[in-house]
Structure formats: structure tokens, C-alpha cells
Image 1 (cartoon, rainbow, N blue to C red):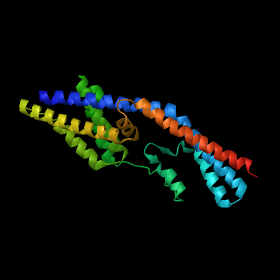
Image 2 (image 1 turned 180 degrees about the vertical axis):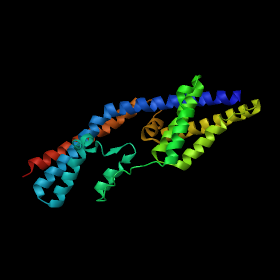
Image 3 (image 1 turned 180 degrees about the horizontal axis):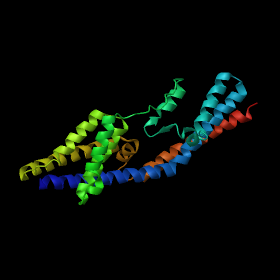
Image 4 (image 1 turned 90 degrees about the vertical axis):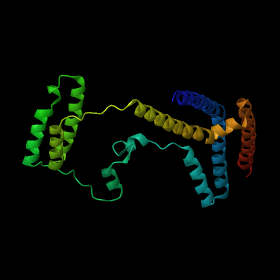
Length: 248
């Protein structure tokens, strides 16, 4: 186990070192080449607009408008989406409105008399303020949270199950043997190594990671080379745009 721990530490150091290299190189890549990429996209859009102005072709105008739209930020996105969606996606009400489905009002839950009685009994017995130790208080708070959720749903069956659970008392956990602890530790180390392997593979296969592998000893020289290529492309686009604008 000690050997596995040490090997994992060394592997983690290697992965973290590479992650920092990728992150730093990505930042340099964006700082040095980002404006050049943006300039190329702007020139491409202007070329399409100039071509559309000359030809009057609706298809040319469509292409020009699409290219310009890709460069323009969408106005008021945050204000538009506020109250419509969160990190998990559209709220059900918003999805219903966008799909012309009727919006259902929230259902009112009226707990039965049995549910109300179970709820009151459980709160009286398991209230956190009855605990004298912090660990017991935490256990009661977690339990009461489940009780409140079941009562809010009016689920009398779940409340009965919670009542049985409370009556049975806290579970007594059996302490694992030393051998079980060691095996569990080895399993965790193996899982951690597998996770790091996935992270390392993603870093290596990323665009920035691939660029670093092309020039591991001098990545700055690679950036200079790409910058030279982009400069030539910018000059080519500028000449093409000038020709379109000058030609009657």
C-alpha cells in the first residue's frame, strides 16, 4: 500500500505539472494569437459583405449576414434567460410556454390526518434541539429534513417508514478490520489512478496538449511560427478586401 501511495503521488505530480503547462500555454496562445484569429474572422466577414454588395446576389447576402452574426454578441442574453433556465436547463414552465403546451399550476398537497399525526409525532421525538451532542444533532437535522420533505409531498407511507426507522434507533456501524481498511485503501488508490489517467488523456488529446507535444522543448517557437502563418493570412485577406472595395 505504501508503494502504491508513493506511485500515485508521483503520478499526480506529473499530471498536475502537465495541466499547469497546458493552462499556461493556452493562456499564451490566446494572448498572442487570439487577436489575429479575431482579425481573420473580421476580414472574412467584410470580404463576404463586399462581395454581396457588388453582386447583389441574395445568397451572397445571406452568407455575409451569417458571417457577421457569428461575430456579433447576442444582446441581453442574461436578461432574456433570467427566470427561464438554470444550470440544469429550461424550467418546466418555460419549456411548456416555448412548445405551446399548457402551463400546469403547481398541485396543492393536502396531507391526510394520518400524515399530519405522524409528522407531529416525529418532529416531537426527533427535533434537533433535543440533542445534547453535536453528532446527534446533525443526525436529527438530516432526519427531520427527510420528514419535512415527505410531509410536503403528503406521503403517509414514507412517514410511516421514517417512524419505523426512528423507532429502530441509530445503526451501529461495525468497524472494519485492519485488513479490510488496507484493501479499501488500495481500491481507492486504484480508482484515483484511473481518474488521473482519464484527466491526463484528455489533456494530451486536447488541441493545446497536441501543440505542446509538437514542440515540448520550445513551445514559444511554435507560437511564433503559427503567428507568422496567421500574419501572412491576414495580409492575404486584407489584399483581397482592398481589391473588392477598389474594383467598381
